Image 1 (cartoon, rainbow, N blue to C red):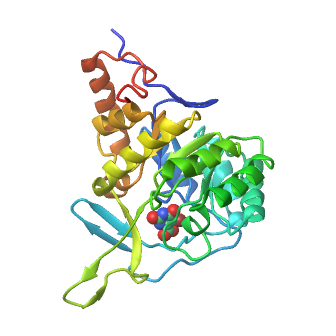
Image 2: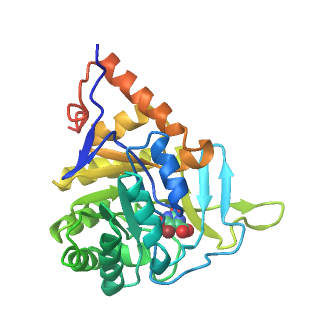
Image 3: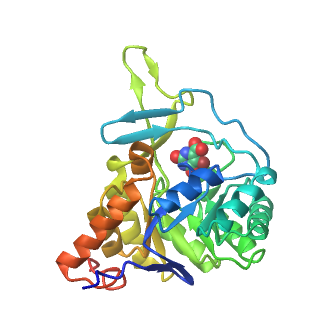
Length: 304
Ligand code: RRO
């Protein structure tokens, strides 16, 4: 007897299963990206790459706790010039590779996306949503006008699919996503981290060197689900769900809210790449027990 068909698709991009590695986790070297794929991910999203190398913030950049973590890494990355090799090696190993980029304006985003296409990326994910770096991410991705203008510029600069990653730290995430769709985005990714902070009472100061950071992990699953649900109510392009996914049933919840695929980040950072095969097995078992024979049968089934 054959099990359920767990193949997924985000628009024209077919994926062997709906579980992608989220940006920022194990995404800076081809060795770790390939290892994640071999551990069972359907594909990988690279670390967010900018025009120039950046060191990021000083330590502490991460605060871990029971239900997730806070980070303010500050966009550390080697710069686009040093990243061609990583994408090329990852692609040469047969890995579905989505390249995440961040820029300060339309020109930077478009030039980064074009370079990633040259390097062989299967799609580009626009980081319009890092919650804590001045001049980047959510600072320029929180208004429909800015999102629209960046997406339009990138869309006209590349042939590969353009995914727009949204911040949840706005009043109307669906309006933001709709502006990306209208500007030509091929998919929406939701969500990036939720703005938060931790204080050490003993030290009488914020824990992170940047004070404010991005919350992820179990604590944000219900923000992610709500965001995906709202976005799917306004957009017709596919949505990739992210936020607090640790189990096969978490994946099913996102898909039932309307997502076509998902990304896993904090669970990988806590448990290592081995979580992919466990989550994929759990999803397959869930589908079998619940009588689903394909991912498509589950997409949006919880919507009303
Ligand atoms: O580097 C970071 O601090 C960071 C990024 Br680029 C992002 O998109 N989301 C996040 O929580 N941290």
